[in-house]
Length: 468
Ligand code: FAD
Ligand code: NAD
Image (cartoon, rainbow, N blue to C red; front, side, top):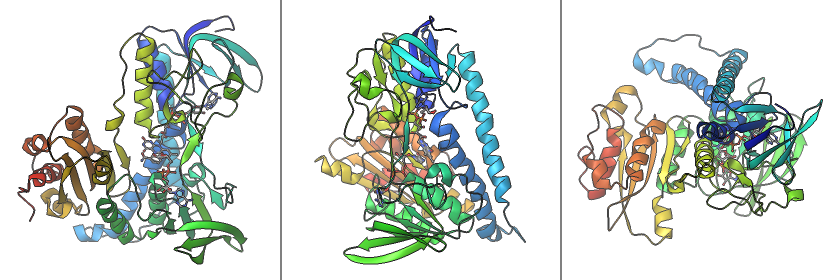
């Protein structure tokens, strides 16, 4: 590999968007280079996102189950405790193993891995720098897949100790006594649960009236109530207005409906969203257009305003999710190869991996009504499901939203154990234009949690079999 080597495609960033895009490009016969500045491929998702957080959620879920539910199953547990160092090592081992897997996979698929930080120059040229050298590579197409980074609040800069983001929040060396999480979204709930299960006193501050704005308030409320039973505390409709250092950490000023109060914590985790990451990429010099949040603007073929430069994943507007980034990557590669790559952005499922899991796809009832679509809805409580009862998973609800005129499924929301798996059949039904009736007539094995989905669909017609 050298300076004069010319690629068909150079992908910048080896997260789920970039590495999957590179694999698909290579599969389609394009000579592909994948540039990554981090020693390990996999991006945010593998290194500090999806994978480490899910490893921590799983370990702490086992611990929490043993502490709080084992007794109800007749399992006698005595002296249960945790070893945080070992728990973190297990998470690190998972990340390490998957990282090696991705590296081997990408190489095997015929992609050239180029290590270093990329700066995009003009005319398809990309400068890649390491601490030792810098080399310019060129390609017919450059695909930007540099992802995102945590958003900071202006009066709460991250210091990695008292004021932290998710990168720090997956690697504390001890369990905080008092933790405040700002933001009741995916990161706030997942990492709030991890540390609460390990013994931290966790308060989640959310400035909207309810957590999870992607869900209807009736469903979000069910999820919140369950998490409250598990020990999480929520301060809703609450604004953090200022912070000051206190003896053992940080004191935050809060405001609710004009009333002010204070809350102190040894750790404050700021989880108010992520923003695009284009540091050092040279996009301003190149004249690449972005929106007011810095997200790179692209057309339906992922093209930026600069010829030969495309962008995908968290760097562009849309849901910041690994599977969405992957789909962007595949479609972008296929379009470059002359195929009809396409992503159905109406069907991107979202999952928050707390217990029970919170999953959704498509429109909520509120979103459908905002679009002036008349809807009918059906719900089913997990408490009425036999498998849920047998396995102690009765907390939760399924809600189905259907078009009132055509019965076409518009959206599904699930709060249930394994909701991350259950949502897949809802996505499939919706992808093929299925109706609530189709879902209601689909045979689901008994006893499974998935029967709740069928029952919620039946209740759209008011003919639920196992609900009152
Ligand atoms: P990224 O994964 O961010 O990858 C970008 C890559 O580009 C990085 O490797 C970076 O080092 C590299 N890069 C940046 N600049 C340069 C440069 N100049 N030169 C070379 N390389 C560069 N999503 C889900 O779907 N499910 C989950 O369960 C989930 N959990 C999450 C948990 C946490 C704590 C966080 C923070 C995120 C989570 N996400 C989850 C979101 C998910 O991680 C992102 O949506 C996804 O990683 C975006 O992929 P990407 O390829 O666009 O960018
Ligand atoms: P998010 O957008 O999911 O949630 C942010 C929450 O913070 C929202 O509820 C918002 O109303 C609230 N908020 C914003 N500003 C606030 C303020 N000043 N005070 C109080 N509350 C405030 O963002 P996140 O949880 O930081 O996650 C970042 C991204 O990573 C998201 O796009 C998410 O999709 C992705 N992610 C996904 C998963 C998953 O799929 N399981 C897990 C973690 C992260």
